[in-house]
Image (tube, rainbow, N blue to C red; front, side, top):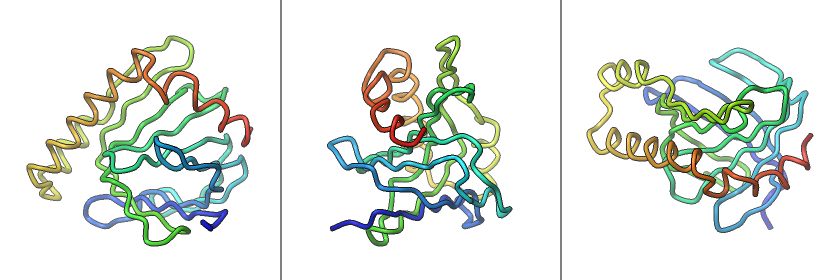
Length: 168
């Protein structure tokens, strides 16, 4: 039986710390593993201690080049997807991801979908030497997500709300 708690570790491509936090395993379905992070969760962001002020649900998909963070108000992003390498599960209790800079976000009030951090992606592509296949996968994932967040494709329409209700 899988552990109830999962440590989520994001690193940058050079191995430097990005995000690190505990999350509660909520469910697993055909989309991936749903993890809940309540407000007050102690975390590490860019190597510095932090506390999550707003709860969220993280979807770690099976074999995809992204993760999806689903947020309640007052966070301005309803959905925030990090483009990342496919999850590497070290155990039921520990998942590793490499953040590849690009983010696809849907704004809560307007529904506007945005692609963020293209400049950071371009800079890190050179600095860290992203291989061509990694660049292609990251760009393709961002393009697919840009469409999916805008057209009502699940899990970005409503299905995440049942999991988010468990942590707010």
